[in-house]
Image (cartoon, rainbow, N blue to C red; front, side, top):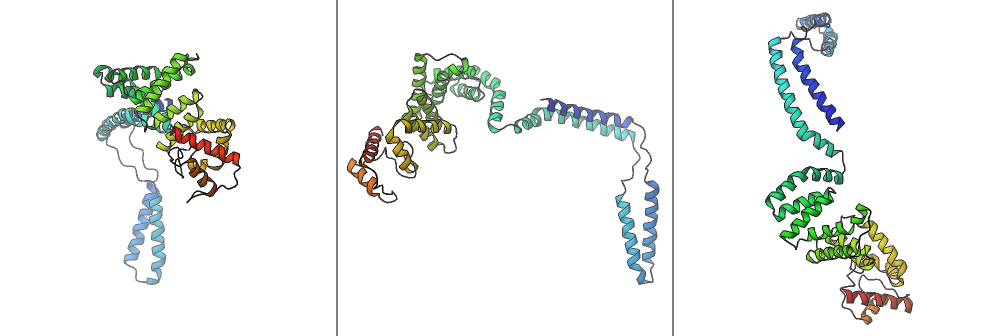
Length: 347
């Protein structure tokens, strides 16, 4: 902000200088005039000699001296021209007008864009959302249309103005209660309200938040944010396996999404420590079939229709690209088969 004001002051100073310039004293004499005249005379003399030269043996030396003289002339600053006060005043007025236009245009366009360019993508998005909020809020309140409430809520949520987001999304649900975005974002705001206020959430609000987020995930299961917020909510309720499944589905829907990486790592660590079957699966199978059996390089074990005997045969003997694991003990094999059958039932 300080730099922007400084830039505007510089533009104003330049405009003032343009106004005062015609009133300054006349253009001073050219200090290089004597040297310029001497070199010009030398140039003309050498050109005259070259044009009338009879002894061709002297031509290289004369051409060299002429070239040096031209180079010396070019090195001098341009000669000052006599000023025309009336013309300068006209130019000054034009300059002031241009400077004023640049000042207004810079204040409205260049400076805000320069400020945004200095921020990362997330911070720039928040700044833009904040700038849009007043207009979006006013539009939504005038039209009372669902789309306008959602636009207002989205800008408020993205800029961390959560009170406005709650108001906007609440009004959006009044016009259409089956809005996945409004449901899940209201749910996560309710669930995390304790972190914002410093007060723990009561059980009733926690259950209400979970219901909102689950409903949104059911209405829009293929929207990445639905699975992301569902995974976050489930992890808060201690449902680690279901939370991991939702978050891995989020990463499948949005491969570039990195919002769940830390939670996924934490969930995997907790699950592997508490469940020997998952620990064994993580070390041997997860790299191909996914951490929760939902598939990856290899097929989904949750969607498999193989019998227990077929699962045992493929695990021990391998099949196609699937490597064999003949060294598993009976106890380890039982753990894996029990886990795969459990996933088949869950789907």
